[in-house]
Structures are given as structure tokens and as C-alpha cells.
Length: 221
Image (cartoon, rainbow, N blue to C red; front, side):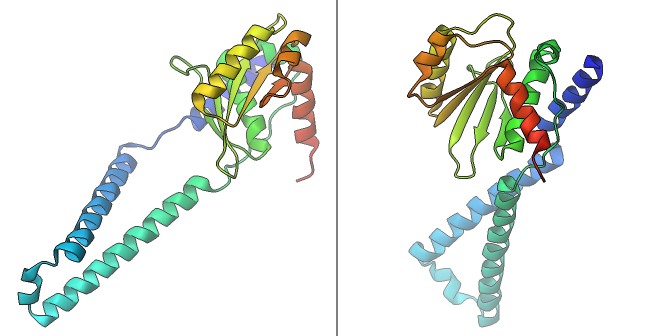
């Protein structure tokens, strides 16, 4: 059972972290280059008022104007399409309801993917950042209004104390995030909960995480 779950979340992890291939990167570079070139030309023609354009035949000037307008319109259209694709709702994958023991049996990476899937089902845009150099952020979230939130995933057996929550608060400030989430498979101490009061921090222990997954799976589509 656990082996199948881990295999599923490894596949999800690879899909979530997939990056554009070489052709896509080259196309984006070319688009940025053409956009910069067009902006420079528009500034040059508007403010420098090049005299040599006046010596061109009328047909050539009209063709030049038509080409310029078509180029600007095409670039604007392409950028709008890219922005729409970037901000459209991400596809949601239903997550399994796991017990606390099953959650703990996941690898750290699989646990982060699992948590990311739950937040995605709640309407967040999700970016996995776990690994070396993550600066204390395992999952980065964006709300529809663009506000940023950060998530730390703690796959622990022992109770999470206030020191961990204080570290998370420092990460929240460093990341300039609007909110922070601590998600763990363990319990959270009363001291940690008291310290987090009146701060933009949400603490989610193992039992709460199971209840969240259950409620999301039972939510009507």
C-alpha cells in the first residue's frame, strides 16, 4: 500500500517540477528579444523622429507602418496568452486519505508533494521548493489575489515545539510572505500554539491534516 502511494507521489513530484524543454526556452528567449527590440524601435521612432523615414517611398512607409502595427499587436497577443496560461487554474488531482502513520511512512519529498496537492485542491497555486537551498520553504503558495504564502513540512514523530514555529516566523519575514503554514505528521505543543497566536501562522498537526484530506475528498465537485 505504502509502496504504491510513494510511487504515485514520486510521479506527481516529477510532473509538478517539470520545466520547459530546450525548444520552449529558446522560444521564450526569442519572444523576449523581439519584445525588447520592438520597444527600442518604438522609442526611437517616437522621440528621435528619424529623418530617413521621410525619404522612403510612400508605399514603403505605409508598409513599414503596417508591419510595425502588426508586430506590436502580435507581441501583445502572445504575451496575453502566456499570462493567461500562467495564471489559469492548475489541474487538481484527488489525493488519497492517509492515516498519520501512512503519512509518516512517505519520504520527505513525497510528503511535500502530498501537502502541495491538498493546498492545490483548496484553490492555491503551488510551487514545490523543498530540497537543498530551499531557505526553509518546502512549498510556496499564491492566492488568486497574488499574495504569497509559505509552507514548512515537518515529517516528525516527536511533538513540534515553539522553536520550530519561531524559525518559521523568521522565514515568513525573510520571504516577505503574507502567511505561513506549518504542516506536520506529529503533534504541536501548547507552547508553540500559544506563540503562534495573533500571528499570520497556521499550524496543522497530523490529525488535522487527515481531517483536511478527508473533507476535501468528500467535498462535492
